Image 1 (cartoon, rainbow, N blue to C red):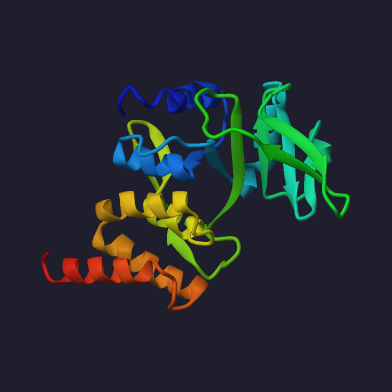
Image 2 (image 1 turned 90 degrees about the vertical axis):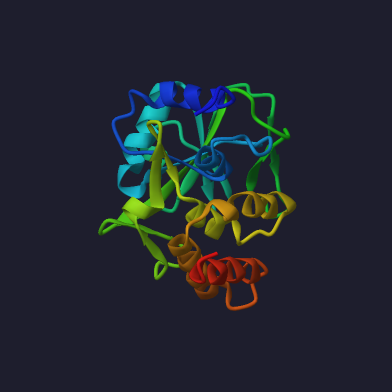
Amino acid sequence: MNSSFALIRSLLQFLDPFDAEWFVSGGWAIDIHLNQITRKRCDLDISVPFSDRQKCIEFFLKQGWRIEGKLAGGFKTLRKLADYGDDIHYFWSFLEGAEFISEYIDENRNRRIAYNRAYQSELDFIEVFFDLIEDNHFVFRDFPEVKRYKKEAILEKEGVKYLAPEAVLLLKSRRLSEKNTRDFNVVVGSMHSEAISWLIEALTLVHGSMHPWLEELELRGNTMGHGG
């Protein structure tokens, strides 16, 4: 991993005492896979198995970081483990007094939090997802029929575990922003034929046959299938 991954090295040091499995997810997982920074990332995502969620919350609380659990209707501050409920599937954590965080009440009187910066350069914010790992599979919470063998879904490079590109892209496929489309374009050429086949099947199950990424994936899959 080259010298431009200072943020990931800081993350490794921060989580070194954490006695549970974790792996980088989101856009940073793509950059780790490619071993290059493909664009400035606005935030850093990691995933922890849902079975270790309480251990994870306790760790962040002991570090003195603020934890904001995401609920369907807004955010809930977790000041102690008893504040947590299983309806919280991920949280934002950041240093107290972070200037890039603001709070507001929406039209439904829900407490919301806004993230107000274009990219992250130091370890002052981590978004933590509680992902389902069941029967040695990584399971997609919104579509539990979509799953991937853990050894294929969670890869490792130079001591850093990260979510495989096909799994990251499936999660990003729900929001076709310019950034997510760019992530698709930069990493798809590095994916092997089995990963492409899996992503084609998963995208079709989740979105149907009209997702805009399918045409490119099918073209690449066919080329690989013909020895290209």
